[in-house]
Image 1 (cartoon, one colour):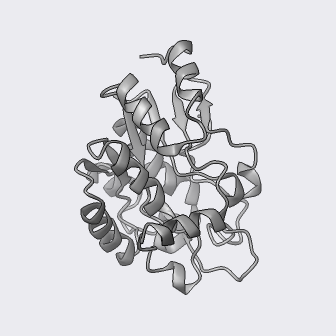
Image 2 (image 1 turned 135 degrees about the vertical axis):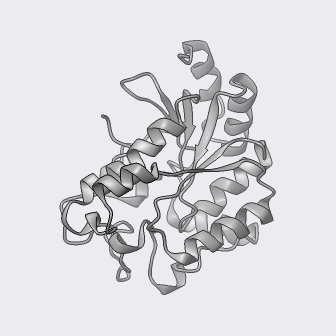
Length: 228
């Protein structure tokens, strides 16, 4: 299914209102929209908006098998607290892991391949029914995201909605406090961006929020948000 120009135009009317954007997308595209969430550092705010707009929207969590234990606990607790009723795990097939990463150490010598097997491929499969995917990306997260738009049409026609694209880190923190939303427990330990445990490190104050992801490598994205 291709999202029509008229639907995109209708969604653009709500670009500045995350809850209304999600609500209108759910109304205009029933069964065709899903939310991607890492249940990471700032995920609670987007998920609170989702719960307010439509708590039954599918929320896809990439179960890579390499997450911090804190992330898995946070995923369960936050979903229950917000009343999200359709959180789904997207995991690589066991046979794929057995063939290409039997020791669980692929990340150490080929992180691109590790991300492809554990994130990109499972998401490609999980999102097949959904021409519209919601993400929690923000322009202020990294230089590579400074041009991010709220409504993004990819080359293959898939639409990405980024309701928080224009929100600053301070605005997100303030709104999370106002809503009494719990942060990811690792935030207090210096992790402003949280991915898989082997490839995520704490950062110093003032550093790029994503500088702890694949630290020391030229890699800046796992691949789920880049053209393929």
